[in-house]
Image (cartoon, rainbow, N blue to C red; front, side, top):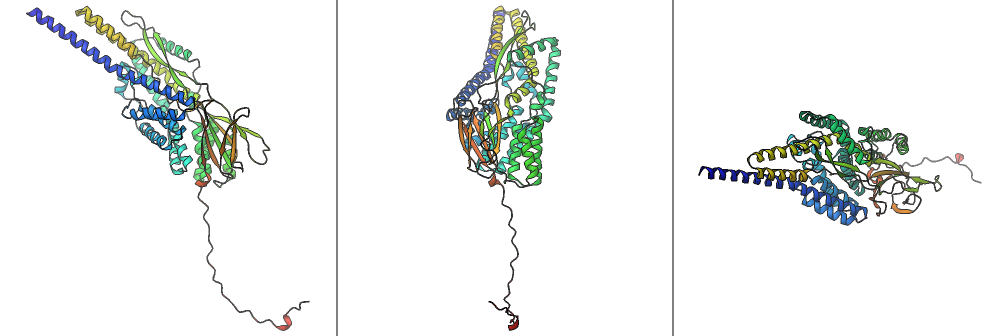
Length: 519
């Protein structure tokens, strides 16, 4: 009876272990399935944008965003895709909705909320970085508010546009003041965990070198300097310049343009607009049109798996997965137009690069990459060690159970070894600026490099105008959004003179001798 009881107890323990492993594997597998869905959906959305199938891209993105509203982990990515695709498809109400939802997700992290939680850090060590809540990167947060203002500008909601451009400025300042501090804090935490393992620092450095070599690009120099977005500064500057005669607004516009000059030394359009502020105190009277050309799509990430020389039990290495930075090359580049003005005599104006989104995204990623590599190696080694310990302990009592535990652990490691590839891929690759005198004809003819027609843009003659032209690929049709800013300036107050009282006075009689004789 005692032997039977012991046998029964062993069976129960084996059943409990099997149930636990099954539950752990199923629970851990569910986020991986979600990640696969996310990756597949974003690829389909990007493919539709590149092909110029804007309604199709919008429909896919908005449907996915609606389904993901309760998915705290990934919903921001879906909201961003829906907001931008709806904007490109000119579905303003849906675009506004998803930009608003995206802002609600990122707002708590503006000087209020920590970027990561302790419990989340533990979970990412046990599984991987894909299960953390996606909060957006500094470049993405800045562009959420900047892009959101474009819809308001086009529809003449200038108070709302001002609010959103100010939010973008706040995220600019937050990126400068907090990003380096947050990265340093996360790296220090990862380094401490690494030292506790007793591993060589050269192991992490070697892995980082291999990941960067796989990317095919060197680490960005002065990465922190390119996190602020000159597109945001320039758009806010020309908005304030064109819509307000208030001295404070015009000084803020000047400060934004000076910031652009600091980010892009020798940027000629900024110098021209600073001179415009200094020479012309009246808003809404300068006949200048600013064309912002948003071409291509932002970078994306691919997965790179690497064996790391860290011994765990009988195995001398662990396998880890890392994100690698990839750029898209399908973008038109510069555009051309007649420079405008009677003195131009048919001269051609060419756009100049204002914002290199590839560089901004890469700078932010390169700053985080050492921490990502360290954390992923720790996560992979921790899972491998846990599997080895569990299988060894189980094998001491039952070799069959030990083998089952080992197989389940290996399956779990394989399924949970995944890089975090999430990013807002629907941002443009680059943003060019074309500054020209507003033509009296009220029509601007834009051309591709070399002179082939691109599109015709109607503008308000003798007034300031802002134009946005979006092309997700060189072969996609251009999407034009236009804001006439002259209507934003209130008319100058009319000063009325006090009414005069006119009294009728009888003329005095004229003496005959004083009357002139007419010939």
